[in-house]
Amino acid sequence: MRVFVTGASGFVGSAVVAALLAKGHQVLGLARSAQSAEKLAAAGAEVLLGDLSDSACLMAGASQCDGVIHTGFNHDFSKFVENCEMDRQAIVAMAEAMAGSNKPLLVTSGVGVLGGLGRTILESDRASDNFPRKSEQAADEALNMGVKAMVIRLAPSTHGEGDHGFVPILISLAREKGFAGYVGDGGNRWCGVHRLDAADLFVLALEKGEAGARYHAVAESEVAMKAIAGQIAKGLGLEAKGLDVEAAREYFTWFEHFASFDAPSSNRWTCQQLGWQPTRLGLLDDIAKPYYYR
Image (tube, rainbow, N blue to C red; front, side, top):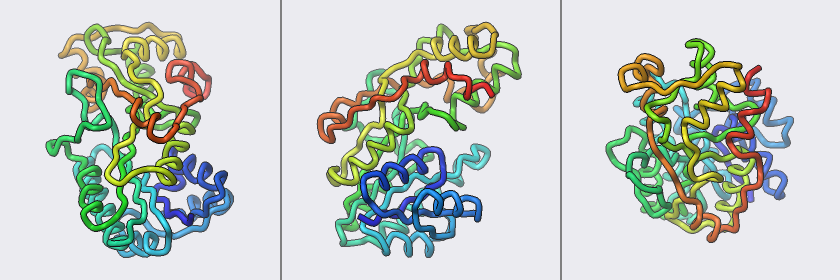
């Protein structure tokens, strides 16, 4: 297949591109800079210059290909609401270009948008309309347009060398504050997946997935925040400390919501349906590696 990939030079997207090429697919990657374009070309992909705000460009990329994998997202959290709307509009634009084709469109979401259920999150659970990110709702719109839309929900910690997500934020805070903090008793749970395992899942879903499905890119269903903070403390030669609500708010500032959410998640249905078998390093073993502390 010829596959259009947004976010193609990013942390997850670049792994998806490599996995697609390794399986014999052709890739048209969206690049917003000359540097990203060079990186994609060197990997063996074709390049389309543009960004997620350019609906005409996105529609052109989608219309030229047999399927789309949308991993792009602007992670400037100071503009989170605006970026969520840009994401929704990007998905709808690509779906409009694919309308009536039954071509696969894989939309990236996160199990974190379902946090707070008080139980393990399942693939059958639906994202709340109250959360600003509307990727899954846009995927449902695409489905109604006659597109084979599917959702890949990434774990809150999609980790590996080159990670610039949640764990590096925790490491940066620990360096700044002089200790690795966690909220309360640290019993709230994140789930994790190595980016290369996640990339394998994207390819499997492209090849074998069913319209309307939600798949969980989750290798470890629950890792306690106290354990994550403990490993970070060890990596930095610091101590880990539990924080009450007020102290946690001061320590984490805008990140306090993410540091405190509880999102244990199942991958059982995903593995059964697609034959996915994550094999790479687990979260705690990975964040013990020196590359997280350079």
